[in-house]
Image (cartoon, rainbow over all chains, first blue to last red; front, side, top):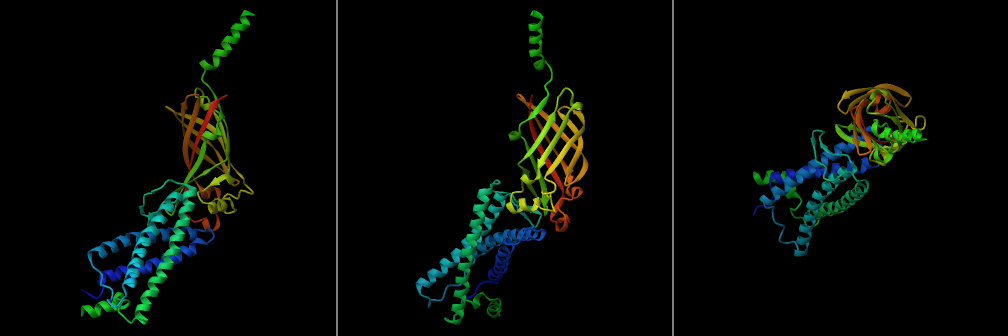
Length: 182
Length: 184
């Protein structure tokens, strides 16, 4: 059994990490801006990046289902292994639910998403103010939940590295793959 | 006396025999909407309050007259902050210019149910000549005018300052209307 992630899995993981941190930061920043041309521009960028993340999560899932990830260390108690799997399940669930809620919110608010200004994403809902406001709350709540799970994800990785001193964190780092492939 | 009764009978019949003149605008069955592009994406909105005066006899279309007043403060852009923004100085400046007004000039019949209404559109203290194509259809006892025309927001100084460039909000704005009217 391989002890490291494939290079593709690592690339997808870190690409997603960069994209999601950018999306989170942009989302919270743009939300409180007064209306201006820049605000509208940032909203469009956020929506384009969100659609990209939505596509990327499916690519990740396809890769995940066709490439078995390395097993968790046997030294890990069963309950912690279960928590790790639940945490990853929550991350994937939220990576699907959050862009979906954003897409539905844009539809309900009457602002269609056109990916990079070129590819129109169909509106799944008709314009509906109340539903749009509700979906905005859903989008925001899911993101707060996502941040909580992310804190757990990063905290766990750091705990494995500095306290347990195992390879859970390093096996997702780019350098690790070179060492193994050499 | 007999003659008077006869005259009354004829008078009663005449409106049915003559072409009717549509003058009573039914606000609840009429609408003014608009579509513009925001970073290439079509976004629509509407005006909730407007009033209209109309005299239209399909038998004498060139004698038709129409005027239209739109309460710009009643704009619905789809977002409350958008509504507030466009009421402000860079856009409609509704405090100084609360109403947009269209007054018809000449009316041309293009054949079929198609007409072309030339007129003047005044928004934010600026007046432009516009040509508005419209169709007229009767539905039972009421007549319905449908049409749309494109204005350039810069012609009326709608969206000044930071909004003056067209990269985010396009210059062209399509105004669509539906006016439902019944005879007197």
